[in-house]
Each structure stands twice: as C-alpha cells, then as structure tokens.
Length: 216
Image 1: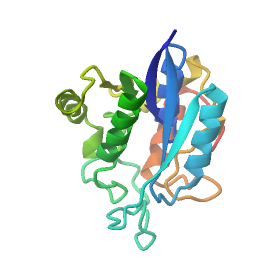
Image 2 (image 1 turned 45 degrees about the vertical axis):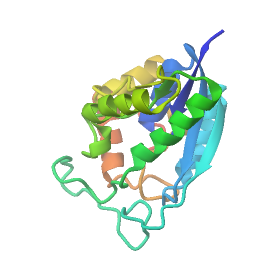
Image 3 (image 1 turned 135 degrees about the vertical axis):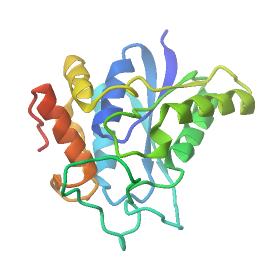
C-alpha cells in the first residue's frame, strides 16, 4: 500500500508537474485553495488536473478581508512586465503569508489522515522573488512541524525548488504532464495575458525546453 501524501495544487505549471512527479509513489490527496484570487480559472484547472491524475481533492475556501495583494484586490492592477526582466523588488502579486496559510492547512490535513509528506511546487530559481518560496523558509517550517505536531514525522518536500522553468517543462514532458490543463496567468481572463511575470516565466520555460505550450 502506498504511503499518503498531501499535494498543494494550484493548477499551474509547477504544482501540476510536482503532482505528476510523485503520484505514482504516493497516494496523493490534493489541496486546492480558493482565496479570492482574481485568476479563479486556476481553481477549475486544478480540479481537472486532479481528476486526470486520478487523485482525490479538496477545495478550501479562505477569506482574506485585509487584501494586501493585487491578486486578491481588484482595485490594484496586476503589474505587467514590460522589460521581461524578473527579480529584485517583490511584486504586488505577492499574497502576504499565503504559503504559511496553505502549509498550515496541509499540516492539519496530513495529521488527520496519517500522511507524512506534504509536497509543494515551490521554485527558487525562475520565480518572482516571493519570500515564502525560498529553501530557507521551508527548512524552518519543517522545524515548526516537528515542534508543533503530535506526529513529528510530517515533512514538507519541495522537489522542484532548485529547477529552472526549462527543467520543469522537461520534467513535465517526461512524466506526461497534461500541460493543456494547466493555467499560470495572473490576470484572470479567458486567455493568458502574456505580460504578467507568471506568463513570462512560463513562456521562457517552454521556449528554452524547445517545447510548444498548448495553452499559449
């Protein structure tokens, strides 16, 4: 019998590839978060990814009334990247405490069902500079898990944390990730905007991997 694992699934390139990397090794339970994000399309995409992967999923609704991010505050504009250069200042799409909130839910879920692994598709190379995507953050969060849980064997795993987007696309291709079901754009339209950081990073990955993006 496979050991149980929780996979945080947004429906994007990184989380979907992570799911496909581990779904044959573990009995995966996907957590999908509805936190008021303007790109709500990703929720339905995540559901379809989980179904296609043959995994059970739960959608958790979270209300963040204080906003603090252009992803959840429609009065703030999604920043469009005109230069194509990413890095430096943390963008307004950063949602304060998001991964901390998500991982806390995942920890509760893991303890409740007896799962020992929590997988998250965080990436610290080709990313927008969010502070809660860095290796040091996850190392320290694992220490919190050990201190604050009854089952001290639960651990966060970040299998693509040191991968470039090119590497992730190649891994996804190898593991037959249904890229056509994934969604990365922040803008929440019917089609990818091609101008936000997430779109630019995704396009970079497919181009460098020599693959065609079925969503673009």
